[in-house]
Length: 139
Picture: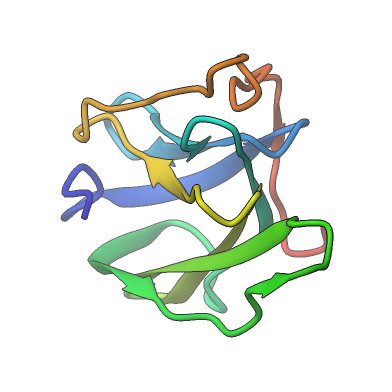
């Protein structure tokens, strides 16, 4: 689990136009980028982000994986896995719902700067354009 958000104050969030990365704007510091990553022959992306009810700036209290229902597979060996991350802040929870599509053998994750580990996929299928757009409550 990432520690890079511990005790930070998030002032805003931006998401890449391809949904493969998101950037957390940090009060008094450099932005922190999380990348959707997938093992070998799979593809991962950020599906939905629920912003804290109280808005920004928001001080991070804790970060934890969140079990989300919804993983499924089909007859043609396509498997969709659903993952979640909950960032508790002093303004409410920030919930990230991210997905991975594979043949069922591979999985996905969010890769953080302090992980020191980002595959990007064998064919670069998980490498983001990193063309960021502001994420707002109305999007």
